[in-house]
Amino acid sequence: MASVATNPGGSAERPASVPAPAAPDGTVKALFREAGELAIFTFRTFGALRGALRYPAEIFRQSSILARGSTGVIAAMCFLIGFSAINFAYYFLRAAGAADYTGLFSGLATARAACPVMFGYVFAAKVGCGLVAEIGAMRISQEIDALESEAIDPMRYVVAVRLLAAMIFLPGAVFIGLLGMSAGCYLTAVDVVQGLSSSGFSRYHWAIQTVQDQLYALIMMGTMAISIVIVSCFYGWRTKGGPAEVGGSVARSLVVNLVLIHVIIGGFIFLFYGLDPKLPIGG
Image (tube, rainbow, N blue to C red; front, side, top):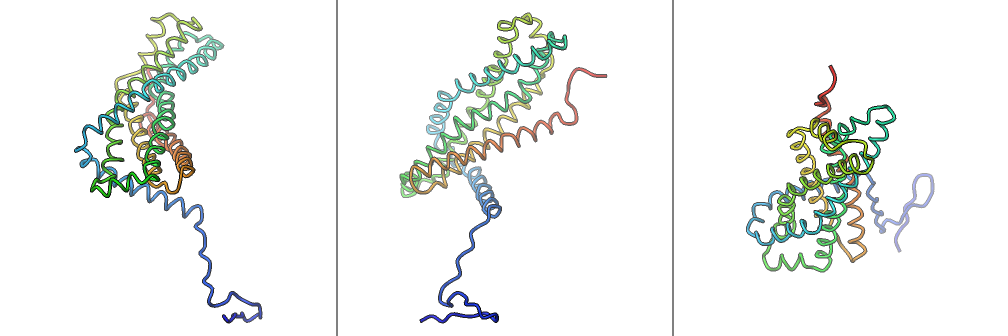
């Protein structure tokens, strides 16, 4: 029979033969561990990009899937955010007697903030969650293990291939998003509220934007998309268990991606426009 140790006060302690229970990881500790695993996964993904070039057919197949499944959603949602933004701007400026300058607001919102934010939301929900579900299903059905048994590196064939496909899809997606928001702004200002003429809207809408703004938008939206793809692949890759765990991975990846979207956009807006807003107004 195991002896029971007593402390100097006389109270009984745990039997010596029973191991002490492991202390559960704290939330902060688990968060840092997960962030470290994500960083390692990111380095492995970029390291596998070169090897993924041996699968061009799969790269273009994945890119075509993204184009067919996501282009219309990106265009529609950016169109709607442009529609809503100009509806607010027109009536707000009209109350101040400055409705003619609605185009200035649309020019500012299109490339600098509203379009990148909506693009990030759509990409995280449509593309990111789809990647988590797909890779998570591959993991729990042992398809990834089957690739390894055939001497195929799944980091190249599963993860890096999808990242390269997203990079191919990105320039067109950014163009479609910016064009969709501009179309939504134009339709609202000129045809719906009928507050501006076509030339009056176009004058201010395009006068406040430069090629540099479009490049900045591409950098912001491209960085977001690459981050979303890596995070989504990471949570799909680490899925264990059954279908319920796939759903949990999808939900967790979406939360992380939504936080990253605002951090990335906030950081780039401060970097590009924080000290010099580059507005053609003022003294």
